Image 1 (cartoon, rainbow, N blue to C red):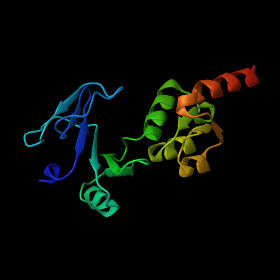
Image 2: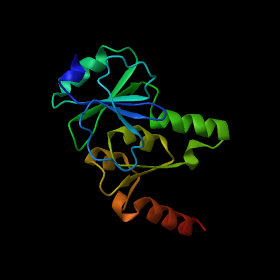
Image 3: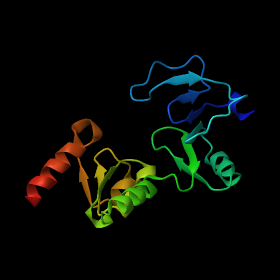
Image 4: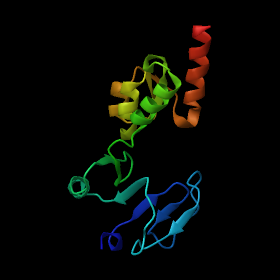
Length: 163
């Protein structure tokens, strides 16, 4: 079983499952973390993440699951697997359609691989200063890092310039 040889996490609507035992110290912002070996796991998953240094393994897993999206993390040997339409850009499209907001009037902020599509879709795509180079390459502008209140600084500047 693959969960016996690597770390796997599964996010559900209210719990973060992990096969790492003992669990690491509580991680801020992760919510409830529960240990499992996944042998009898039957909950509906929002996202599954797996640790592997071999990108080909991640690609083979994604290819074996119909409608699976696989995105690498930029700073660790982890990959996120989710449904193809479970993306940030799909969420923005759904919200803007329901609220009748043109995409040209949206702003998105990002720093990692899974943010690229969202930044390209939004009216303004803003990269954080600590973003990976691929994110900065598609962004309309760059703001301060996550640790420097970059989103707040950009919005404050943007709103003052418009007024």
